[in-house]
Amino acid sequence: MRIPVTKLDLSSGLFTRSARLLSKRWPLKLRGLAQAQNVLAAAMGYRDFHDLQQYARAGARPLVEFDLPDLQRAFIANLTASGKLRDADARTLAEALPLGQFGSLGARSPVTPLFPILRDEFWDEEARESALTEWLCGLEMVPSVRYFVHGGRVFVFKKLLGLAADFRGLTDALPPADKVAEWVHECMLSPLEAVRDWGVVPEPFFVSRNREIVHRELNASVPGSFVDQDAMNTALATLLSGDVAPGTGEFMFRGQALNLLAPVRATDLPPFPAVLRHDHAQAQDSNDSRAPATTAFVEGFSPVTAQSYAELQRESARWTSARQIAFRVAQDNVGSLWASEAPQMRWDAKGFDAEDWYDPNAAAALRRFFPELTAMSDVELYYAFDAFREAVYTPRGWEADQDPDFMWFMLAKVHGCPLAQDQSEDDIDLGKWAVYARTVGAATSDIPTLSADAVRYGKALSSMVRRVDAAMAFVRDGAEGPAAGASWEDAVQFVRGRPDRAPYARATALYGAEVVTLKEIFRRSRSVNLTFVHVEQSADDFEATSQG
Image 1 (cartoon, helix red, strand yellow):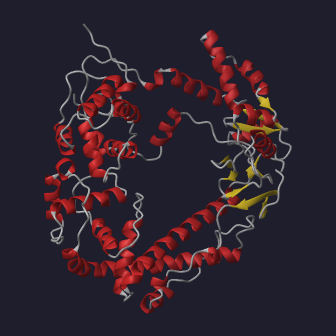
Image 2 (cartoon, one colour; image 1 turned 90 degrees about the vertical axis):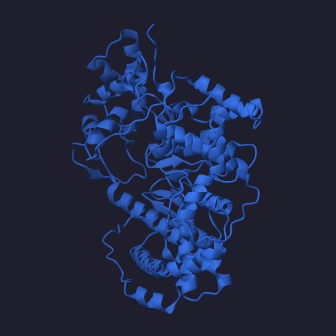
Image 3 (tube, helix red, strand yellow; image 1 turned 30 degrees about the vertical axis):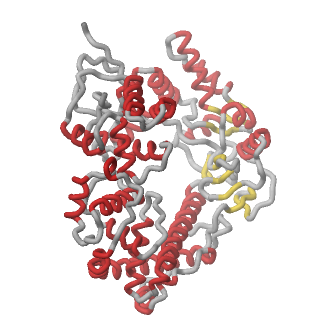
């Protein structure tokens, strides 16, 4: 049995993502994305990926609709019948893949199923909760945030929502406003209760996988080890109440000791790439290295001083200019280098089963797009392009096309650069740096190291700039709260965005993130000049019944 696949399943990247997931869970290592796509296509009942593409593009539709268990049984039967997997392994894989999202005849497809009864997502219990949430947030006495600290106590919206939902469940009606006012006071908890019983974490901190309490905007952690949950809860409650968690750190921020998780000064960057220490690059670069204005600098984050901020901006300007020059030089010279190198390029295709995983039609298309690769067989060319698609991110999935980045990828490979193959642009940049290094006369044996060092430096610098910019923006914009001594009513009005604002000196925010429902997100998306909101639903999200 074939599992239905639509054109949208291909264009949205669903099939490609599923193939990557299958590759990670397959018992034996699959050689590239193309093989994973062919394995998945066969498991879905097609001869190969090309056959699946033809089916999807033809717009064929099944005579009946299948539910998820039907699709999983078909998937398992296809795999076990071919002897590719044992029943238990096939079953595990079927449960891990999003088979229920393929071939939807609902919102994902223009084809209308026979005799459907559709239930919109806003009709279910989650939608009822969203409506209740919006109703509560519309009441003047309710802070429309996840938590709110006032008078040493913490209001927790989640508890209020639970009380209102219980009332509605018993009476099938919304609670009266005076009842909600009573509940608001009932939802004022101690900081420890808010943390321990309701999972409140004071903004802008979060708990990392290593069980560190991390300041999101400053990229710094609270001193101490919090393996024990009680110790973690105590520290979070202390921060939530506005007190200082104990410990000695590298710097102080609003009274709280913190330790940086990554450097923030240009002096801590790796050495400037040696490949750019070339006369013409340095000369042209010097004209664009003037220090930018430091108006964006804000006092208050002691690891970054006005001087270190200006130095980082200068370094960023120097690198941006030098990189642009180098890549321009590479672009100007890549044509001649490709013409001389491409005819000798080869690709090791050993271990690939051409009979099962090789698509001659795609190889023929690639041969038309890259005729210079004369030394490569069609199989080598096919799997070279497959390795490129596996290494470099693309939303299109596996399509034989004249992607210019394939040239940079191959030049990085032929010069021995250490390919990252991590679905980023790094392997493309490696090729550009390799061409530049060769153009400026670098020794062939040095090109891999020079190229890798340049990519590494650029990533380190851009990451540091982002961290420092985030810290400056937080210090500048994130230091406001209700005026000291404000009444509960005035404090609530602050949260609702209407009152005068006043600076405060706490390490944590007095209130959490705004409570926003999915319906409200849709409303806002329509108000910011977007032309549409794309919503996907699988066949499992619909309830259908046939008449007669």
